[in-house]
Image 1 (cartoon, one colour):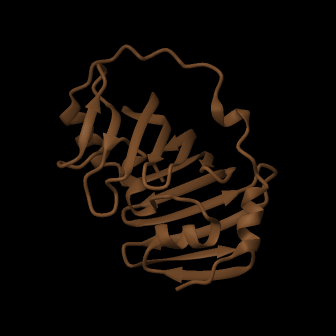
Image 2: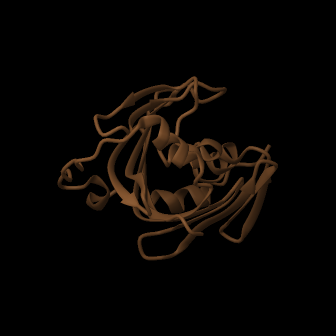
Length: 206
């Protein structure tokens, strides 16, 4: 088991969740009517992408924020997180076999990416499932609320170690003929934490 890293956690704690994550206005809903099954199939086919944006983590004990860059290539991913002023906070690379994380000039490895990022930073991030959830893609057993436009507006995952997550989606935009969310809010009922993701750019050609 990895030892806890108080210095790194204190570094993250210095970056307080501020107004730019909260958002001041709700954009108008697009006028579109999708076939939900066809839309899910198009999401499933997107396994090469790059997103950039902002993360906000909130728990009863703390509020933190960071800029992020996530690149996905099939089952391989790279996650980079930086402070508001551009200082590197962590670099994570992984796949289905394991993950390596570098933070504060220290290197950590684990088979469980979500556990590793929690041990190092204190953030609750469902890394393994997020590559699907970030797109609004659900699995057959999941409980889903579909919007009038045809995309997922709320997702209650049904899988091992993920039943405690509830995910809400907003601000869908058309990216290369695929409608993708640009605001994703993940609430964890187990520890009363919230992960807010605001995506500035989607690139489906990476």
